[in-house]
Image (cartoon, rainbow over all chains, first blue to last red; front, side):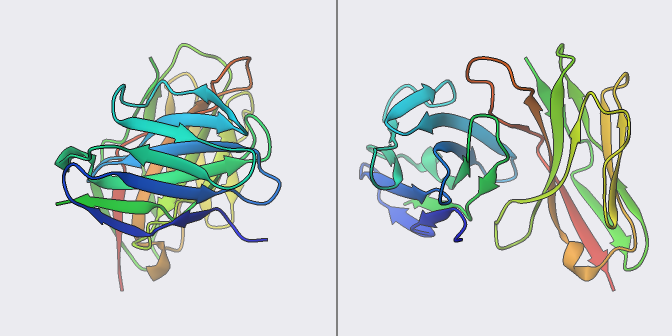
Length: 113
Length: 118
């Protein structure tokens, strides 16, 4: 049973481009969480999704960021018109049910140049 | 709002010795979970140990144990017989317990970088 798969592992974007980060949860997990880790910081919650629903997006910046978890396929975190301050590691975690144990992916390191 | 504080940005320990990492937190809730995560250079977040607030007994996982002081809101991690593979960032995290609504997210401290000297 593969763990939480995130791709790409590294992503470089120029300022103003779009970044799309993908997360495939563990088999049987229907709850997905996205976190962001800035340099020298702990992870900060961004958004919590179930299949086809956003449950809590209280940690998401109001502009340029969006997330989805469609019925089929991976969860996507999308950042439009990236800026240097978006450079960070983005982690996805999944659980089999609400408040279940988390399993984290290895993260995507986004670098904006 | 809940907060998690790790006051030691860096720690160092000799191989085979014992080290304790500190964590304090602030919450008005009575039922919650506390965690220690390890993040090696590979960046993978690995759960080391978990503690339920309603349990008085301190959690233990092999060489890893915690000292949970609920009244003091303190949750320290003790690593015994330290090994070179223990070198990593260690993050303390808090999560409210199972209530209605979207309360499942983790709140992390800023981390402690642990070095292990051979």
